[in-house]
Image 1 (spheres, rainbow, N blue to C red):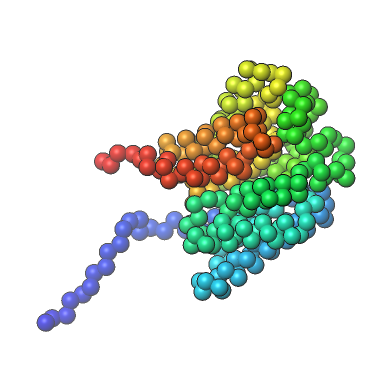
Image 2 (cartoon, rainbow, N blue to C red; image 1 turned 60 degrees about the vertical axis):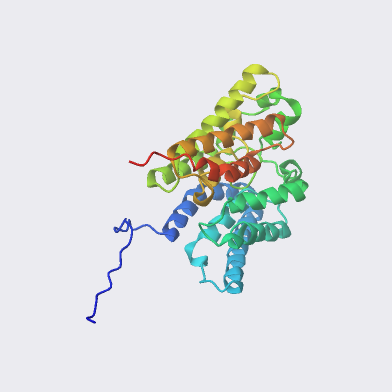
Length: 315
């Protein structure tokens, strides 16, 4: 029997783009840095402590899980570092160390590694952690209580709490431009709207996030908030107030478009983003929580497999 050469075939594409998981995560981190640095500048060393501890703990949990599950060491791909950074950006500057330890454990171990690691998680790991903390230790992430000792010369009452408690009249106590420029209480890296917007545009131009999700997300919030406002302008805030407060811009560019938990086709991406935006306003206006961003995106994560069944017809 003569020798035969074994021919091995592979599916296209064959031309590597030059990108990598590490490169993408590093760009995500770079895009988030302006908002994170602003938070450090505003809150000082406490904010730096929260962010560095969050990034360090996330990478440590990742390393421990790699060793326990006998997988290749993956902390070098910067995924855990990015998860830790965004998680820390959502916390108040006074967050106790144990909340960071527990939160990063949930994000890395429960939200990511038990599903198989990067690319296998059905839910955004950061949001899984935040949801558990909000349900278990809501008072620790109450920005009004956590930041009561800070006074920067502007209104430090959490804007969404003010509207939730006192109606649309509370909006007059804030300046939308100032809110957009970061002069508000909130998460360390969630308040600097202009920084988050610049980071988001950078990621869109580089092709690292799905712009359809971000745009439909913001439009969903705007349109839903507008409908509530025209129905009862004395109770419900104007749309732009919802855009520049809370976790809105962090959600639009760094949470909702996460690859593993969001759709890949055009129509599903629009439905996913718009649905999350609608749910955020519904939770804020008539739900039990002050800011619905965490739970709204998680709900759409659950629905994501259903959305992805909407596909273009095969030619």
